[in-house]
Image 1 (cartoon, one colour):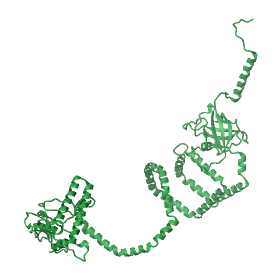
Image 2 (tube, rainbow, N blue to C red):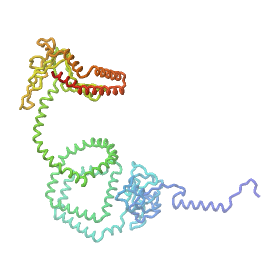
Image 3 (tube, rainbow, N blue to C red):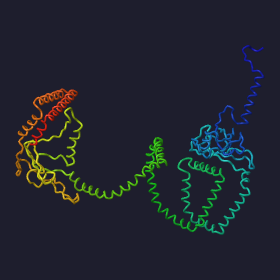
Image 4 (cartoon, rainbow, N blue to C red):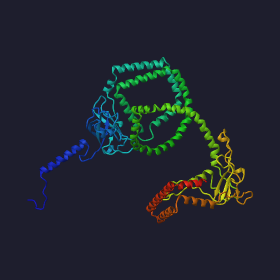
Length: 585
């Protein structure tokens, strides 16, 4: 018997099971060269056709197996996201001409020795045997400076290609294609032998040495300035070619029209030769224009950057302006225009008559404009220049001083109280008489007035027969622009100056005038009526001083009613007629 502390061995069936598992794992690793728990790097590529590519087909880099194909899937435009990735774009365009095309989506697993793959990696399906057979994916991992792709990256169809199969070659060379090829070779031989094409190629070879430099520059420019510029050009060109190939009738028409165009050029070969001979001179003359154009590009780019916010905000403006455009479109529609024409039809003859009559009015407008330009405007911009002894200063030009006077009376008719308007125009007088020679409306007689205070001075002078106080003589029948303008630079006189005349005595006695007015009022209104009016006027004044506008208005109405009643009594009694007779005497 064994000791109680010894460990028991595994049963035979358990050892056999472990051995079977180890043999299975070893066989799997030996045949697949992969660990079952490994996580392979998976990528996808879109091919135009799978060409009988099967799952488990190898993926090779430089002839070395680095992975295998795990799935081949039919791809259509039903999956927009896959189609967008396959085309190498970020968004799906609704009117993309490439949508709806058929392709194959190949899923591959890449081992560690085949990593990393870059964004410009290329994939090609190539046969493993010359006369058809199984295919493999020949992979070019891309340039080292390109970014590495993550797992599950989809390479677009522009980075994949297919090998040419023998059946495709035989299918292409059908009888009609072979006949067209024979015709082409025959015509090409005639062009070289009969029409001097060989000599043209010789001349082209001799003169093309200088063009190789510029050809290399063009080839370098074709590569683009950024990564994938050339591949993007090829991808887009491939779309164009596929679009042309999808419509054979349009392609045939294009070739037919191109043959017509080239035939037209061939018919004008002499003119075309002369034009090509002049082309270098044209290019030399265009160099300054191209230089100026290149110099304008920075400003154009700056303008484009500055205009970008306006362009972005133009959409709301266009949306806001759409209703207005709709209304304008309706406004210029046939019904509206017909109505407008019907309304304007009676007006057009009258406008024609007005236009004919305007011919006589235009010369008068010209005379008026000339009068303003030569006389009125210079006079309004003139300034009075008084002598040193003149007691007042000049505030400005005639226009400015006239405007200052108008400002003072601008609101005279808008403000008032129970007594009426604040500003009133009344006739008055005083003990000082002023005489203006030739100041009457007829321009000959003198004008006489009364002043409350003695005259301090005048500019121009208003006393005596002084020439500077005379109104410029108006010559009838002579154009306004030739008339003598008013003279504002005349010498003035000040009280106390030599030659300043004495103020004429007042021809009217003020005291006698006041007494006559009192007598007239006594004739019209008896003393009792005068006392009543005076008392009512005192009531109005008291209400105004108290600030009671309603009471002031009420008392004013009573005063007006009382005054009208006494005036009507004076008219009926004949007192008003007597006062009128007395005033006339």
